[in-house]
Length: 446
Image 1: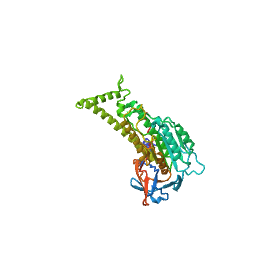
Image 2 (image 1 turned 180 degrees about the horizontal axis):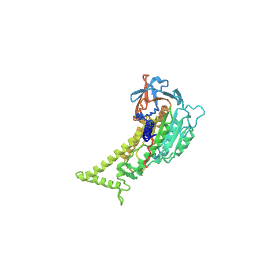
Image 3 (image 1 turned 90 degrees about the vertical axis):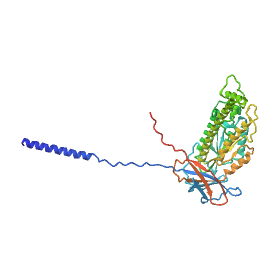
């Protein structure tokens, strides 16, 4: 083959090789696919909402023969379908309409399975707020619990007891009434006396020790309510024994502590005391004296306003937790009728003492009224009140529904329960609150 032929064959071979390589490359390179964006998937968990309902006739007698069709439940004005219905009459449970029971697990909260005839519909949780019960009132508190044992608790009732302080009471739900006797003997009041509050370290938001004790008490209640939330189809009575709350009491006495007002070293409180005295003794026509008096009064008023607002927020949170757990607060001040201070060492102004008692008992009334219970405060007739609690926890309906509103941002929902049968009075809780959603924890930054 001559050189020209060789060169032609070589050129053909190279061209063919390049063409094949181009084909192979094109075959191996996938065409650009269409970019498709996946739609996000939202998961909504719908939990069963339950509320207990009391229905009475014109003679104030419980009506036990209602059916599912006699009730109407509205959430935020929207009618819901009644899914479950339980009747408790005379403390005994009748499952009129119930979901298939899930397998139960024995744990810290629920007591061991009761082998014989367990048809109790009554669940009590007794909260002994010994951080807000005076040491001198210990005998009265123990007498109250003996009366509770006699009037309110019956064989077959489940109960638990927890305390906020050094009494160290923590009895999980049980049927054993002997545990109740043990608890009574351990109850001891550890509340601050008025003189101790006046002389304690204080700031613009009130005595620090008093605020700390209130936080401990409320935290204990929240934990107890979280446990009660796991108990279903029962009316849960939360018997709240305390002398109540006031975060900034005795403001005038704290600003002028007579036990240390004229010490050699003036504290902030003592200086305020002297300034107050100078302002009060100054001639009413002098603007300086008036200015001092108004300034001190204004600071005291602002502190009271902020402390009262903080206490209101905490009480609202507690009532939301109770409504979520379908629990009812029955608040009791074991002191009965509260008179003037009898201890000579507690030298506070009588008007301040009365204001303190009124505000503290009002906090107990709020807890009870916002959850459908009653407050036994400033009364010596505990027997009548305990009988009423006994009646309200013995006869009731428990209705359940699945909310048609999947919006998790709508945490607080208004409730209204009606009966179609005329002439009947209905009580049910007015609202409930969803638990805040817990999102997956984000990775920590190094």
